[in-house]
Length: 350
Image (cartoon, rainbow, N blue to C red; front, side, top):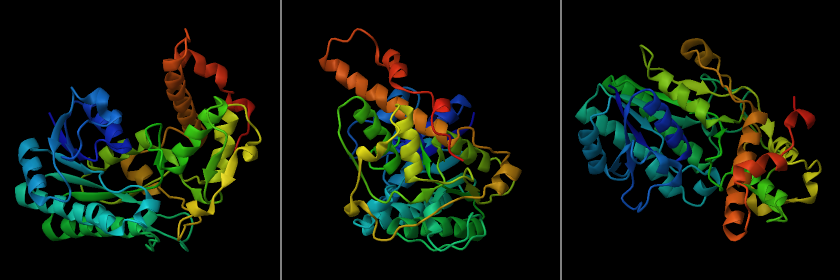
């Protein structure tokens, strides 16, 4: 039976990856910070199936101990400071977790067992602006945020340990991937959550930043499949993981509001310039040909399905909260379909 250690297991990707590996018969260990009193709701349903180990990417000794405790065949490093906008205000913390944390884990692997296979979650934010569209494994890097810079360090230190120490270490250059488990600090979840609350008359307005930014959005559940496939290859290589289709924030709004039968969302959305990034990337679009060819990987969830999935989940979550205070005899899941409009009758994006 194979075993894996996942850092960032309480996050969106970590929870989906844990489920994925458990389904494949893995023994799964999750690294959780000592400051966490309760396990995150994303993995609450896995508490009896996953072995949790206290550790911190800032603490080399705790990583050494985590490897001794888990003896993993594979390590998936998904931890780090995720919100790009936050990294402009917390650049030092971002560097400690997202850059040096990778080095500490690789060093722990080198000392404990260099035969462990290592996956690093790299980011499309490393490409930055002014690059050709679409971006692939040969596109130059020009990060435009502390987050992107830190991810680039993590990416290159992974390459360095692979070439210097012979460790099976590879990076997935992951383009934006979302799900109902995305945090509310991300624009996609902010939209789906806001749309649900507007539909339920719990909220009047939705404040957003740059509506013209274009991103290649996929489903997190599809992307963890690519992570696992990368560690199955005979030789470690880095891969772009993307859908190959980009959409604007406006497109996301179009589909999200269409899901609840609202065509004109301009009445509900306000642009707040304070939410703009100091430097923004106009467009990110990935070419995952290499992953399609070598890994036989294809995304299964398209853009419209992803948005609908997120809106549906937020409708149900908000209904559950409403029902705690009201005498409603139906379940939240029974009420959601009556609040949604089939997308095939609404806007279809190219």
